[in-house]
Image 1 (cartoon, rainbow, N blue to C red):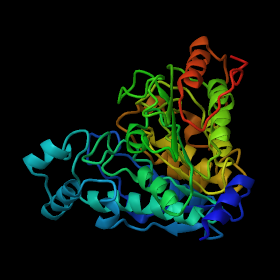
Image 2 (image 1 turned 135 degrees about the horizontal axis):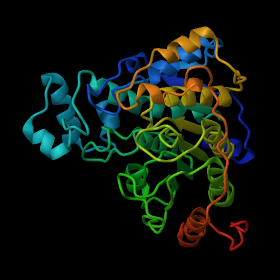
Image 3 (image 1 turned 30 degrees about the vertical axis):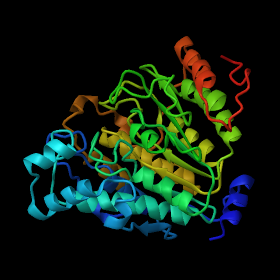
Image 4 (image 1 turned 180 degrees about the horizontal axis):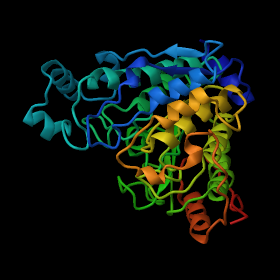
Length: 398
């Protein structure tokens, strides 16, 4: 690929090729064992729903690649990668590996197929960036392990596939990559990986005072990060305000050659691990506005611990990205899939009727609260990326 052609496509904002969906059959296994927030069906349900809706009929689905050790050690420490390989071979984690690398814990449990699953996530994100580089959007909902750090596991994340998507874009000669994290939890691992790299701007909108308790508004890394922590009850109008008054003006001044978006579904109303209150439609809108910034774009998944809201969000996001009409009511084949889901974190009486019959949530609009306007003003004031010229009136409605 000629990097200059990709750069021209990015600047024109034109998507020259149809979107692609990258995933793997490995995700039909839930993983993580029992008594874990991720011991639920997520990607397998998304695949089933897309098939039920006929949204793979034109074969936009691509089977994920698997990352090699050589790939992984570009970012992750060789001894950590070796420890995961040894655990996979032995079928258990040694005491030393557990203490050193935070694997085999309640947070990051060891389970059969872990290494294959984690390397497939990385391989899929690398593949997504390569496929996107000719000027398209590639959707990889199996990715989004944004907490992973170089020397160990963190926050349910063993390897950081998002880092590898960004590295792949940089390897292809793109000069500026925007990373937007919409997950309810701060994208700490990605910020740490690139905070001293002026080619990458990381922007994270996440719930304040929520694990991992990083990403304060005055945290700009080494001047290449923008963090927008938002309060509980964060609604659709507030997300739209943050996007329109902070993220998009900042991104346009950065002028990215490629975009990577983490669309965690844990900011949705009904998720057990956050108190945000977004509709999936608001998330879809935010993702679409971000990928419109540059022709090469990768969209990954992330967090999400309510199997019904996750499946509906990520299925509908593929529908929006690929240009399908979102049905008002799902066909019986799709409702049966959603009705079969279970979760130890969601009481049966709390499962809303529309979670099994529709894809799109009702909008949750509301006032833009003073604390949201305030964090936007402060974020624009403190962000320090050298190529961004934030105008004083860029959030005039605040």
